Image (cartoon, rainbow, N blue to C red; front, side, top):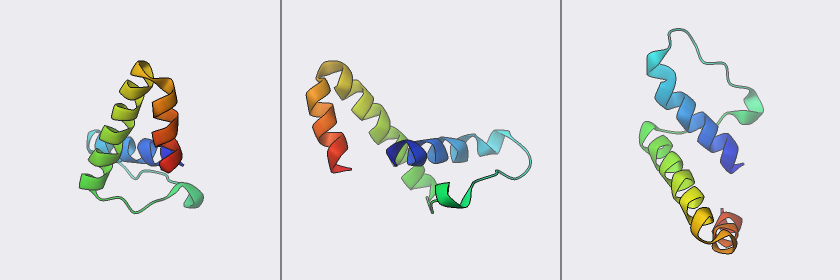
Length: 65
């Protein structure tokens, strides 16, 4: 689920660079504001950095979400 949210947030960020509508499957859709999108990407990046430092701690935190 986290990866779906991250992909969606990134697509919203890049949406400004593309013309036309963004195709989002119904099961992948989420209501995410631009602020929430940035927070989701920031959280994902922080978890990736934590995984590099301590994989077990990253797994524990990822299990919470």
